[in-house]
Image (cartoon, rainbow over all chains, first blue to last red):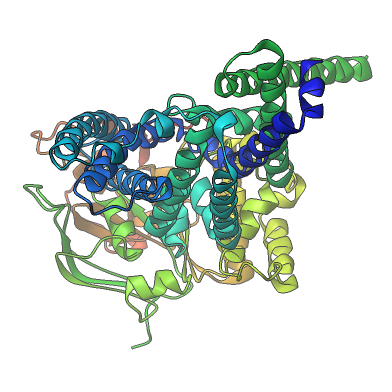
Length: 303
Length: 299
């Protein structure tokens, strides 16, 4: 296997370990959030938030061009995260109104942010060239279509800090969050602060999505929030087993995807997503087999 | 005068941007331990009344008090056990009936503490009282309409609610399920003595197990015992022009068949006024009747 041979070479194994560590931080938090995303039908929110990153990248470029933002990749990432969080909260706030359905609100923010990003990047390039700072406007492809194989230790550290923050927050509010996620109206009537739950969930999703984008790219980031949970829900109907299975699905998809990427020399992001899609298909198959077996068992017992 | 469980005093409410009032000068007092049915057509202000009681809306004029407190304070303190319509919940959530019932009170427990044994004991007691103990470990998404309703009532009671407020409780439940529902409310009332409010467009749901019935179509039309409801009250209530459509009813038809000697147009003030031979049939479909529950399989 090429993967095993590569691992023996120190240089290759080094960046594979970095890629794996960065990837694990992403699939751990996405795996946990994925269950809520699937049950609450928030997959399109993921698409909206990830595409909002275009606007954030444009804003970061402009801030860098005028000299407000330091010339660090991390500073750019912070601006993108803040922009995505603001977009997520904007979607939640606008869709609260009876006149704007939630998918319309997401669609508006999605296209609006992309258009804003394109315009701001163009303006930033002009401003930077005028001021002789052309180098500070960084390639937005690095953030929007980032590859896990180019991940460095800084990405690993950022990934795990965000992962731990997301998981600890989710653990602290797990009971009111679950109550609200199951039954929003009743939870509010019982005293749960529904708007706060929605806001926190949106922030957690935005954080996870921006970090996930570095693994799989903007177009595929949603997959990491949808596929592990959808697969796990086919295998169990208990909360903690589903959550653990969802994380395990993410980890398995990551490892299989990276190995496939090495073996076949395909891009790692799409490989990870395809591996997760296959795991989902296998889960559906397993669930169908199990229901057929239980029906057969029941009819055998009754005869 | 003793404190009421719930009290509306001259309450009116107008939704932002709406031309007319959703509720018009409603005064209603629900005594502690009373069982009140609120009957009215779709669009008649029943849901608005509940939202005002829960503090999710503020009245345009008048006051609402729940157990002597403002609705917001009462909600924060968990005084009201709200049982919503079935279709409102995410039934794909991987939670058991026991999980859902426990969350109703355990959400207040700090994250770093386990669920206290007194909450677990109360959950067990309420699961038993509502008959939900038989399916307590089933996934919440695999219940019949009647079973889910019992689980939701158990959740409200386990949260130690003083007022049980049920919104359209018989939507998606067949006739035998409705009888079991009435028996369940009677059992809960006898055992715990909680105040119960049943809000519905369905006459049978409201009448079964209520001490009094408030007839609401934007205004409070009458306030009587279940036996005091006459065909005239129903005809007036359900033909009320709630949608501003010249009396066209939104999915609600009332047929009142009464002997000729009881057709005077008057509101019954007491149970003694009720004609015993009146036959009523009310048919209608809630605008929110999305859930289609089967018969209660566990009966």
